[in-house]
Image (cartoon, rainbow, N blue to C red; front, side):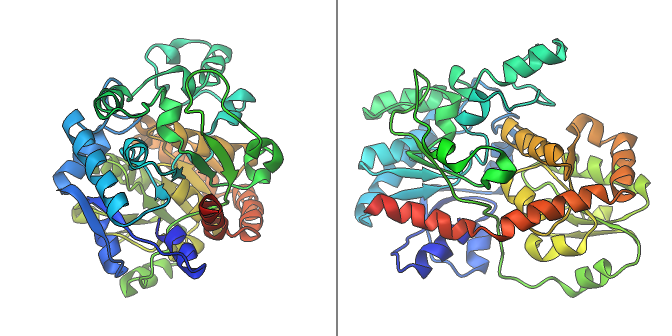
Length: 405
């Protein structure tokens, strides 16, 4: 969001920022970005609960927010839009905006689907998910799991219940499927055609067919968009990165502390130095001669100086790594992250492993294999060249402004 905001401001747009609060609001403070809070501010405890209840991790019968929260946030967001004369809303996973923008009568632009958009499954591009979102699927043979993966998120209503109950109360359009939960009126696809594998003309000509989609949904390539936090690398991190042994960067930010602990514990056996971005987790006890734990780090300044990164595979961390030409191990916690890992595997720039295996010697073995081979870095460098030729935030800003025309 910060990257898109900067690009919009550079084009002379009038931009206002608002948030539910939570973990990363402090980044807005550090960047001196003025913002308002919608409704009741999410504190750290609520943010941790939200991560546990997130898509792919929490029970699929819930909506991550309670019905009361969805209703309160939707009304407050719509009020904000009206008071500030907002003409278009841009969001990253503030899903209540699906209802508040309808209430305010303005279009919604999203980018949080990453590359997992309808043309992908309509073309049968998905490989079996490491952790299938539907129970029982993991026991099927591979060809059947692949077929299920490509059935499409528009065929399921996972996580939609609360949104539709509140939509009915508000008298606005509901959310017909899990796919619709991730798509705006305009969905920015944050990749390049040669990396994703779908020509721009074909992707942008896509139109919703049949039930499961909001009729207004459109797609447009933007390109890579990831955080470039305007903060220095701490001196102790710079000194740590100057070590002679290979360095692995662990940045599994939208996760629970015990998951990060398990990953770092497993990586100790690979013989590399480990830099950990702990964000809100208190992981100082993991520190040792070969493990350095920090809070929120400017990853775009870290990635070029490490030999391998380990993340959950969200679009931001994947693209930040690829923009630096750094190979990646993806530990996906939900389907979008899994597909990002699949793209890397297709190009040879990364590998996937389940969280269950990431806490075992399997992770150290995979890390050692990737550090000992140059082919993953060479593949990441090829993606780096594709990304370097594309101004993702600028293209996103142009797409947003095109709606105002």
